[in-house]
Amino acid sequence: MKQATSTTKHLSTNGLKRDLRPRGEQKAVVISDGIPRRTLSFYKYVKIADPVALQKELQERWGNLGCFGRIYIAHEGINAQMNVPVKSWDQFDAFMKNKPEFYGIPYKFAVEEGQIPSFYKLTIKVRKKVVADGLDDESFDVTNTGAYLTAEEMNEYINNPDAVVVDMRNSYESEIGHFEGAIRPRVDTFRDELALVPEILKEHKGKKVALYCTGGIRCEKASAWLKHKGFTDVKHLKGGVIDYKHQVEREGLDNHFKGKNFVFDERLGERIGDEVISYCHLCKTNKSDQHYHCQNQVCHVLFLGCDSCIEKKHGYCSYYCMTFDRLPASWKKKYASWYNARRRTQQFKKARLQG
Ligand SMILES: [Zn+2]
Ligand SMILES: [Zn+2]
Image (cartoon, rainbow, N blue to C red):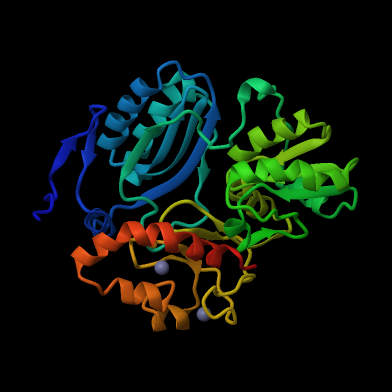
């Protein structure tokens, strides 16, 4: 089969240009182009009248500036994780400041850029919600969010026996890094987290509650949800772990976040504390907080690997995946659906049961 060439772009059903080059090719081009980029994330709950029109506008403008990233737009707002070429920064920033919906939006800059670019394509999607939370927004007051906490205030909560700190992220995120003493629910999705946290907090009734997540967006909804559930003193860390790190450095505060902050891009994590707090999922012996995606594209499971296991298994999560990947392409395709149905759940469980 002939692959799309580097310049091939096709119209997708919604009329937007879609880059049909294989993933590896897109990535290789961006890695080798040497263009300095700035990684940032931002979100805003704001009424967006026509998400599809905004999607087209951003695709065109940000595409022309050479931006890459993953952006979700909904009637309720925007959630963006992206990078901007340093040379296009002023234009990007001017556009944001002139767009009434985005005015005053706080940027959260990456703590570290890493060896590889954070994103290598621009994906802008229209969704029902900017974060999949499984909540019925009509059933409670989503605007009744908790007050914000600064990094300094967060540190006070951590040292206060009359306060509880809750990690609103999934287990695979909190496994590699979290605040000292934080409650870390064992969940795979934010939806499960929102169902579980009110139950967990029942035994801490009367205590002050502090929530945190990667960049702050999940806690906006979660704090309003917990207040609706009867917890009166709920606050959340402004700008999440990313901004906590910046404040700690700027203001010379103690860092109470141990390990790495998981991020949803090619870097997979930013180092916040120096220590490695998690173990390799394959040998369960060596410490590691380096996530990998299994080299077998059908499996693609996220796991923690130590150098020795990664070398031994050539970046695969198991000998099974290593063997599977050596099958001829036609066989792989044939077995992919079977494999996805039978093996993926097992693999995923294997990866998440640790820590
Ligand atoms: Zn290992
Ligand atoms: Zn695998």
